[in-house]
Length: 200
Figure 1 (cartoon, rainbow, N blue to C red):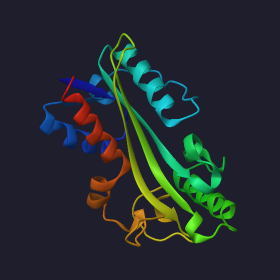
Figure 2 (figure 1 turned 90 degrees about the vertical axis):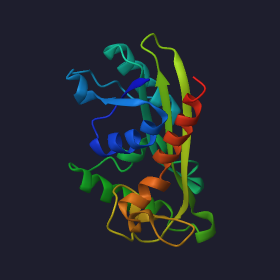
Figure 3 (figure 1 turned 180 degrees about the horizontal axis):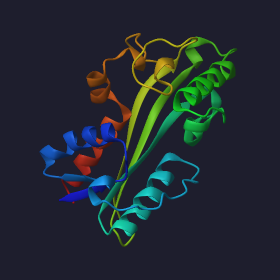
Figure 4 (figure 1 turned 30 degrees about the vertical axis):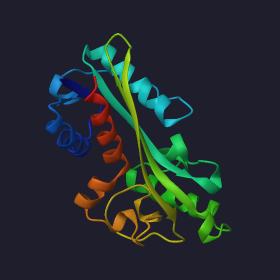
C-alpha cells in the first residue's frame, strides 16, 4: 500500500514513514507529488473533524489515498482548551517562537489559581485515512498524558512542550527528540493506525 501524508513537515514525514514502513506501507509527501494543492480550511470543533477535512481534501485533490492528522493540547481544568485552537490560542505573534511564547503565557495565566493536582492535560493527535472518493478507511487517536507546570522547563521541542510535565517529572521539552518521538501522541496515533491497516 502507498499513501499520501498531508504535511509539509519533513520531521513528521520521517516519523510516520519509520512507523509504517515495517507494515509494508509507503508514504509519499506533498512535495513528492510536486503539486500545488490548496490548503483546506480547518474549521471543525474537534481534532478528528479537522483530520477528516484535511484527509478528504488532499485525497480528492491528489487522487491518492491520504493520511492526515490534527493535534493539540487539551487541559482538563479549561474544559479541553486550548484544543483545536492550540496553535493560535493567544492570537498574537508573527513568528512561531512569538506565538509559542504568547500561547504558553496565556495558558499559565489561565491556570494561575488551579492547584497542581487539577492541572492534568494531554497532547492529542487524531488521524484519518481517506480514499479519493471521500471514503474514510481508518481513524486513530494518540495521547501523551501529563500535567501543566507553573513555569516552562526544557529546551527541546516547541509549542507547549516546556509546560507538559510527564509522570516521571520531566517536561516534554526535557526529552531528547528520539525519546519524544517514540512516546509522543503522534507516534501513538500512527502505531494505532498501522494496527488498523493490518486488517484493511
